[in-house]
Image (cartoon, rainbow, N blue to C red):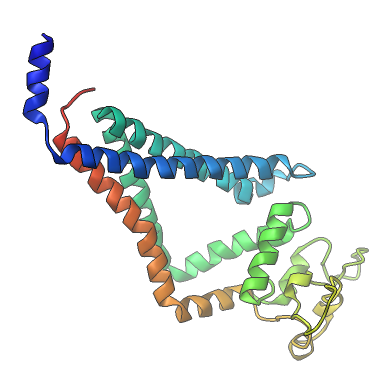
Length: 266
């Protein structure tokens, strides 16, 4: 019986099979370790929050997003690692199917985002509005908004007055907050030679018109800034998209080739 199995295995043996097997295992293992790192960072960020976030921010919580992405990556790359190591057809098929599904989902999102740009902008606007509303409630959202506004040199989604959506920055007379009519310091233009960061630089800015506000903050909304950035960095955006797609294509190619060359064991 053992001799018959060895003969059957010898018939299906291919000199290229070990290389495909080890390459697939190596790349899957790298992404598997990366997925564990993503989950660890997400869990750490979730645990380290001083207060519980409100339910309304759960789906836009950066920590939750990291955990979900990490868990999905862990499952897919685990199938790839063990499937390649054991030449397990079922795991390899699960790996290929899952990776194909993820790739097609990314492709569909990219196509829909391109052809339905206005709807995409509205959807992102809702996300940013929630982030603005809960700016003081979730430290991760606060850091994310500050990073976006600093990097893109913008303020709010449409313009700086969007910060009235926030309870603390709301510019109505009934608001008792000391930050009434203010914007976060991340909206402020840097002052040359300033040694100490002035976190109150955006106080009272919402009561000013566009020209007056332009002297101390970035009055343009992040929506327009993002469009300008993408249009001026099309080559970089294309390179990033290609860099995201190539590893998936490579893993799919290696997996399909290994399935075709290895002996069909379960």
